[in-house]
Length: 156
Ligand code: DLZ
Image 1 (cartoon, protein in one colour):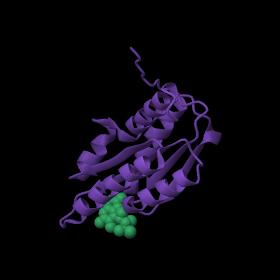
Image 2 (cartoon, helix red, strand yellow):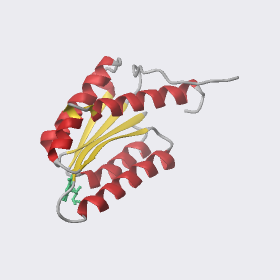
Image 3 (cartoon, protein in one colour):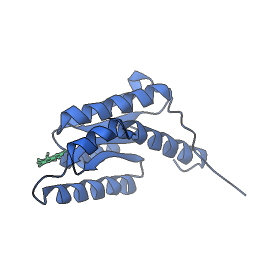
Image 4 (tube, protein in one colour):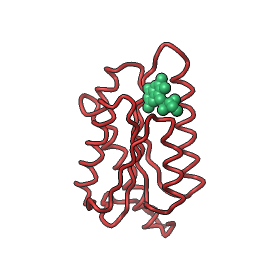
């Protein structure tokens, strides 16, 4: 029986972070969590690149270009979508989610989804470093495991 499981170290991998500036007071907390996790998992500063985009809608394009340019081994996407009074939130959330899944599948590169989709600012605060942890941190863990699993299984 063959069994593969990725470990959580990231030393030697080039990691791109694509971050939305919209709702910046929360997205910067996600960035802090992601950077903290990368450092703890062994990343060198020189292997981390950060790309800031205006809003979450722009994240998939940057992720796609980064993947196509083969600049990184994996991409962490961070943003904060907060529901408002119009259906805007639903359209944005759906497109960003689909867009990022498409990048991962089309380009064959691990893309992790650290984008909050929340109904209220309070829910965002809880997920950006307080009651419910930090989803930026979680996104890095998922990326690390996927990168190492692909490597371990000879699928990179
Ligand atoms: C326009 C908009 C709105 C209403 N809400 C959010 C949000 O909650 N989170 C986010 O990341 N971005 C939002 N944006 C900006 C869009 O993502 C995008 O940047 C603009 O529509 C310009 O393309």
